Length: 333
Image (cartoon, rainbow, N blue to C red; front, top):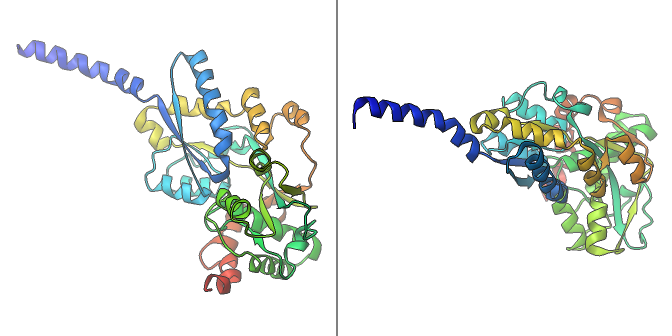
């Protein structure tokens, strides 16, 4: 083979390499939190059909699920997720601090990059034998409460902060809020790593009198168990706005930035918003939300009652923070 021909072939292969890479990298990974499994099982095929119709490209979306903070740490440590759809702003701030996602991630998508909301509610056994109506019932002696671990689960952190906000509303005192939450967590017999594990503990292992979890778990429980459990809406709860972001490091490496952004944009589409409400979440689309006729509930945002997420993380959930202090005796047992 002549030197000229070798050079020609080399240049030709080099030119084709980006096209081959683009064709090969039509699979993306979504690293998400524990109780969003059913949501993305329905979202993903809808997105792939949309992408094929609009872009003419076949794409596959794979999923990874776990406790939200565990997932964030896995992504920071090298899990090659093209997008993250976690359940708490602090987890995305953590990834931004690691240079995995853009520091201004909140501005990349509408509603501070949160395509839907949910809230913390109570699941009790049929007939509500313990007469549980509000957060104050969860601190009563002898009441067994199932909550995932706030150190690893955004679901658990939202529960903790919902209880803290409720106590602040009624007691008007940080010290009394701390005492209230201390009593509540003393009633937790086991700490699962994520929300879905806590649901399993309550429903299948028959542990606890009440499960505190996200509202979207109601639809799953009705599907799996019929009317075996009752749902209780407390007088006040917390607004959870699960945020999303593109993993800029991974998408640059894999050439998937366009698909990743398209996937997250799709979550705001009417089609995806209808799937979101079907799965028990509260959509951002006002028309879809109105049609859903979800139960009314008074909620507060962490920023409005407790402080910024960064402050809440540092004060309550960092190593040695309030959560560690109030649960230290139970952890040693």
